[in-house]
Image: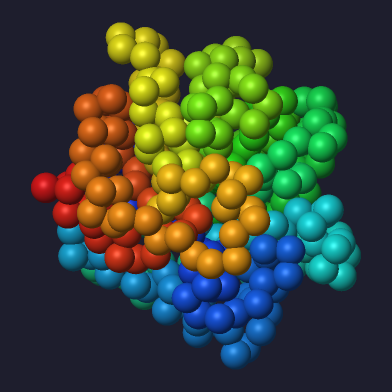
Length: 308
């Protein structure tokens, strides 16, 4: 049902939540984690206002919307660094979906189709792989968070910034165990390959083979379009599995962004125009959002060019 709806119309999602909160709103996010704000009364309105700005864009352009929960870091390794127990993490992941439901209720008469996605991030650093898991280890590791999303009524889960295929495969198998749809979003370096060295073609084909095509679709995130656009082969089957992009504002590499103390908002008009080109490269591209350095103004530019 979800994929059928996405094939029929365009969907928007949000931009670079963490970089927006840190650099534009002056909110400290230890370990780059936004999920603790869910339990801070003084920041709950900040989060709601953040999402509403993007949903207003979807309303104006008459698109669908995918509400991604602010839980990219809400897994055991990062959660424990922030003082969260397993029970705490289950609670906060469920709270995230509850708050996304409240936002959906607020916009249900303005946006025809809204899906709630429980967002998951990688176990380790998104930009480097220090200890790679087997698919079995990844399946067990991500199980608790996915179960929390399923039990809270999320429509799907989205694995964002996956940097090697085994973690993505294990995560997809955990989603399959809980009978909840999953979207896999890979990140790439400036050479268009995953930090693992795998090409997008290799990662997507490997994940589909290992999971019997369980992911409903794939995305690319945390990369500028110029990093991967020329790696998308003509007349290839694998690129038809890519339905979404969440691009960075900056052309900088992951290493450069990681070391940066200032926000690089890039060229918003150029970024929007590149999404028109992406549509010609990716025939099934239907989901548009942003990643590091982007805010609502970048999504407006993308809409101006890609939805014209």
